[in-house]
Length: 335
Image (cartoon, rainbow, N blue to C red):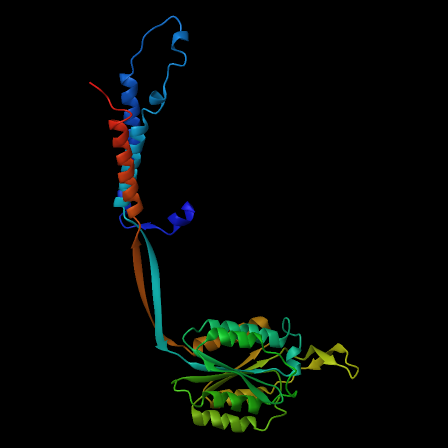
């Protein structure tokens, strides 16, 4: 407990602590003075003096101990021990961002660890945590699209929704246009000067009611940047597939990403297309987007101090009082 207390304490005048060297110096001076004043005599036997010491003699130096403790506490009080608390307030112009994530069956492919969907969720949640002044929304899509979370500044809610994303409850497929259109709709009424969609998919558009190029034109009209991410390795990837009998087997499925479309959407909306071929490259993609979409933040820091010298000052007075009490009562000297 004492170690924890001292770790949180700093001294306003640390140079004063050098005065603590006076404590052992005064103690040594007192001991040498007592030794010089000690009387001695020669006797033939010490048996007569056996058990002649009293408790007063044993504790006769207690007054000095209290005095030295009083001096030590007074020096500590003069050094002004204090604790501090840093208060930081961040103000700035944030970015409204909608994460648009593909949850089709192919996102369970295991060319990422543990699979594409779980890897995408983990990196997206970390991205949200690293941008405290931005607002986030979450849209998922397969053969259709769904708003998992509207745009909000409550990052814990968004992270919880990201980790709760599961595939399989929507019609399977890859409706890139519908996913993008739903994301744009979430940002349409936003008053933020900077609005961004981060669209992640591992396939080619094959469903939905809105064509991806139509959704792209909508983004251009609304002034919303669309960063696109193609997730998947090269060639073939092990993918869980359900047989007609209900059994899940691993099967090598070809990786088909419409990079031309994704690049076109990103480029024409003033953003950029990225290809992630593994867990580490996916993290690097989000780091680059984080650098490209900078948030203007003004941080005000205030440090509040709390004085902690009062216990030392009180202890110094207490030890001084005890020393004087012993001096004029128990160890009082009579002429």
